[in-house]
Every structure is written in structure tokens, then in C-alpha cells.
Length: 216
Image: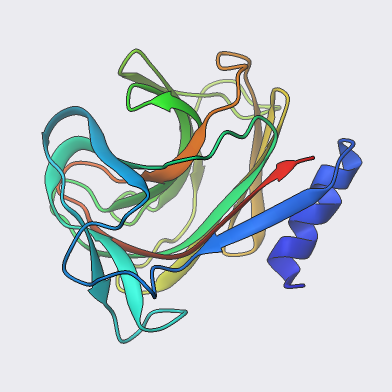
């Protein structure tokens, strides 16, 4: 078991269950087209473009999922997932974007207008966790700190990074590049929902090795 999966298992055992993980790496998908098994959508307006592409630097070669369109918040939801407590993790590389250069992971999504998301931003050099309710995004306070806006951390463009959230009940624990970042508590969304991927505005971002699991 990898260090990441071991960490997930330990977290979920602590809250009373076992971790069962699944990984999506897009390597068996047709390139140049949208992947099967996903709802490719957005929060807000625009024209997102999610396609499977060959990427020579992919952590698991040859393919990645690429978002290269423009929308308020492009969202890709994994069909058939319904997780209340568990974890989601992805490897990402921010390639381009003048307005934004972001990569995010989504959990407890009811639809494209209602979900939690934590994202890393290569233009702002920070990691921030939000709730999106009825299409309105709001940043959430970090445990032990009122106010502020996520955590400042270097997010170099053109390099692969990892982003992870472990969630159980109202507690969310965020890890970036293998290092614990912060915790958030929130009870706005109490039901199981889909996991997914997220970008913002004109971000051109590629994703690989999406791993997720639920408490049994």
C-alpha cells in the first residue's frame, strides 16, 4: 500500500471504519475525447472542455484528463460515486491561465451547484477550501483561526503536485504535496455525494491518478 493510501486507511480507521480505495488514471480511455463515466459540467457560465490527452510527464503514463475550456468553475463529477465519509486525492499540473491557474477536488457533490471543494492556485500560491451552495462559493474558516483565506504555499506551474482531502462528519483535513495543510469544520452538506475535479476561469490544468475511498 502506498504512503497516501496508508494515510487514508489510518484516518478512516480512527473515525470508525475501513478505507476502500479506487483509482482512475484515464490510461484506457480514448484520447482527444471526453472520458466515459463522468458528468462534465460547470458552476456558473462558460464552455468547459474536459478531454483525455497523452501527456509525456504523466505520473502514470500515458494519459491525463485535461481541462482547457473557460467557465466560471468547470466541474467534472464521477458518475456512480456516493460518499459521505472518506477521502479523495489527485495529482495535478497547472499549465496556463492568465485569470486563474487552479486545480481542485470535489466531494459530497449533489450537483454542479452544491459541493465542497479544496483547490490549489498557481497564480495566488495558496490552498483554500470552499463550500458551494446553490451556485455560490464561500471560503471556509480554518480550525483555530477566524478569517483569512486558506494557507499560503508555493504552487509552481508546470510541475506535478498532489492535493488530498480526508472528510468524516464535519471535519475536513487537507494535505498538499504530502504535507498536512489545515483542517476545516463545516456542516452545510450532511449527505453523501459525488467526488470530482474542478478548475476556475481560464485555467488549463491536467489531472492524473484520481484516488478516492469511502468508509465501510
